[in-house]
Structures are given as structure tokens and as C-alpha cells.
Amino acid sequence: MDHPPTNGSDSSSSSSDLPYQSGFHNHFSSEALPGALPLGQSNPLLCPYGLYAEQLSGTSFTSPRKLNLRTWLYRVKPSVTHEPFQPLRPTHGRLVSEFNDSNSSTTPTQLRWKPVEIPETPTDFVRGLYTVCGAGSSFLRHGFAIHMYTANKSMDDRAFCNADGDFLIVPQLGRLWITTECGRLIVSPGEVAVLPQGFRFAVDLPDGPSRGYVAEVFGTHFQLPDLGPIGANGLAAPRDFLVPTAWFEKTTRPGYIIIQKFGGELFTAKQDFSPFNVVAWHGNYAPYKYDLTKFCPFNTVLFDHGDPSVNTVLTAPTDKPGVALLDFAIFPPRWLVAEHTFRPPYYHRNCMSEFMGLIYGGYEAKADGFLPGGASLHSCMTPHGPDTKTYEATISRGNDVGPQKISDTMAFMFESCLVPRICSWALESPFIDHDYYQCWIGLRSHFTGTGADAKDGDIQNGQ
Ligand SMILES: O=C(O)Cc1cc(O)ccc1O
Ligand SMILES: [Fe+2]
Image (cartoon, rainbow, N blue to C red; front, top):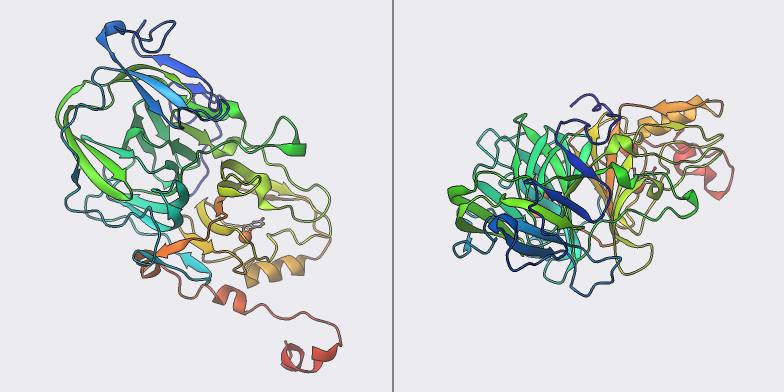
């Protein structure tokens, strides 16, 4: 898309007319038929309307209360009613959930990809999903994977279930109509959706061609970041997270397929009904979406460039305070006002690894080559920063620039403390930009000193 989505003023109706509930990890409850939610208990002998009660646990039973996530689903038939799981045929082969030297390799090189083209052959969300990089293991419940997808077809009579981790989906092209066991979400480019581990969901494409990014985290869940000295308000507000309301469909569906991602492999199981047969539910474990234009950015108002952590929308923590398994940070439209300051992102090397994508517009550190739908990876301690054109343009403007607004842009970063390995198909992709390094090669020395080195190198060469 070439323009940002409108920032709907009413969080319950932005970009669609579906009804949502609002809040982050609230204890929600919703019923599609009056009286379908059992009262006073979760697991009655007989549920209203003859429904089955089924609990979906997102954390161990004994996780501390403030982290404990679970939901009770009241459904026409329980999820267990299916034929045995079989490996998916033909195999998928491009999803990884345990990164090792048989499926991925490592490089400190700066990597960048052009936007991948939408396939011409019929490809749904699951077939079009492929892992770019990641680290750790879904089996050991510690790690992450970054995937991208291109798709052109809805998932007919098939639902996906990820046993490995949570998906944070960032659509870049085309809306996603996501049907989940808790109800439906319409997710436009500029919005993101989280499909927590274990939820069954199906992705339909109302606009056809579709492309986007997915961050998957193993062994933890996304949270809102602490706000520290920012105070009680700012960044992503809990009330702007939208959770579906209960919705169920005609339940008899012979030949329905559940595709289960389990240890990075896909398995299928047949059943004779739709998994979207939940008439009521209550709990704090649910899929949700968030409109990135609602993010309230904070920034420096006098001098210097703040660290990008101030733009964190969601964080998947490790056990170490302040060290993220995966942070999701954005670079939204905002005013730059810092005085006598190099305003674009600084040159740096980071002990964390940074994967970036662009949803629309341009990115402040790259004048060329980083395109909507493209991606870049700067791994642990790999130097990076603005390209030569951005540096020269910024310096040539001098110190007297007034406030500048960065508009019509939405870039994002997945940042992890784990060092990613890169899948072979991503390294061998025709969309990889072999000339990426060239964007910095032209950075000249502006050194004006007359120290020991002044005679050789740059100055002697007249640079
Ligand atoms: O590398 C990047 O472009 C992301 C980034 C942005 C920023 O404003 C400061 C640090 C940083 O890593
Ligand atoms: Fe960076």
C-alpha cells in the first residue's frame, strides 16, 4: 500500500465493522448466544445449550497469577474430535523452529532483501509462510523465528494451529481476515495481530495478494513494556488492543483439515466440523490486534537521538530484567526537534540483533534500497546506520534546521538478545540485495585534524 491507513477515532470500529472487546490481557468474556456462558463456575456438569467446556492454557497451571494466561471455550464439539495427525503432504519444508547447522547458517554480514513477489500459483497463508532467520528451539521453549509470507488465496476449510509459539503478524500488503476460536479479526496493513500459541485460526484474503512479516516467540508471550519514568500513559495504550467477540459458524463441515505446526513440522488431522464452533468464552488468553497509528511516541525534546527502545509496542521478555527475547518496536510518523543533533539513527553496533521491515513509506536511515515489504538484518555487533545519502543530506542541512516531521511512514524492528541463524533459502533468495554494503562504502572521512594519520589514507586521497 502506498498510503497509511486512516487512524479511526473509535478503537472499536477502526478499519472494519466487526465488534471487538478492548484491553490488554484483560479477563474478557463473550457469548454469541444469550446465556451461553456458564455462570458462577467454568466447568459445570452440563453447560448451557449442551456445549462442551474446554480450557486452553497459555502458561503452566502454576505460573504466577500476574503472568497466568488461560481461556475457557464453550464449543459445539471439543477440539479432540479428529482423526490422527499425519505429516502434511506434500511437505512444506520452509519452516524452522529449531535452528542448527542442518537448516541455517550464520553470518555477521549486513543483510537486506527486496520485497518478495507475490506467487502466481495458488498459495494460502500457510503455504506462503517461510522462515527467514531465528535462534533457539521451540522444543526447549526458548527462542524466536522470523518468518515472512506471500499469499494470494484464502485457507478454505483449513485451520492452522501453532503449537510452537505465539505469532505476531505484521501485514504489509492486503488485509487479513482472521477467523479464530475466539471470533474474527480484520487486520489491515498498519495494524498487527497476535495469535497466541495453540489457537486455531484461518486466514482469508479479502484483497487477494498479500505479504507480510511474522515474529514467533517460543516459551513466553508478548507483554506491554514497562513505562518507567514515562509514567502511566504513553506508547501503546492497553485499551487500543482489540480482542474478538465470540462467533461461530455452521459447524458440520466434512473434510475439514487442522494443520498443526509442531516442532517446526506441519501435521494434518481431519475432522467433520469447523473448529470455529465456540459459542462463548471467557479468559485472558486470546488473539488480538493493534492499530500502529494509535501508538503515542515519546522522544527527545532537546538534544541527542534516543534509543529505539522508546518505541517498543510489545515485548516478549526473557528471565533477565530488561533483556528481551523479542521486542517489537516501530518508527512511526513523529516530530524531530532535537537541536545540534544528528537526527537520523546513529551509527552503532548492538549486542542485540535487529531485523527490520517497512510497512509503508520510507525509512529515515535509508534514502534508497529499503522498500516496503523488504527486510534487513543487522546481527549482534554488526555495524550499521544511515546510508551515505542520508548522512550527507543530514550534514549538509547544518545545525539550523527547525522542527521536521517524518510523515507517511511505518517501519518496525524485531530485536532479540539471541543471535539469529539465517535459513538457506533466505540467503540464496533472488531477492537478497548483494550490493547492500555499497550504501555505506561511499561514506567519506570528514576528518579535519592533523594528527598522525593525516598524511595517509583519506586526506591524501583528497577525500
Ligand atoms: O538500526 C536501525 O535503523 C534501528 C535503530 C533506530 C534508531 O533510531 C536507533 C537505533 C537503532 O538501532
Ligand atoms: Fe540499529
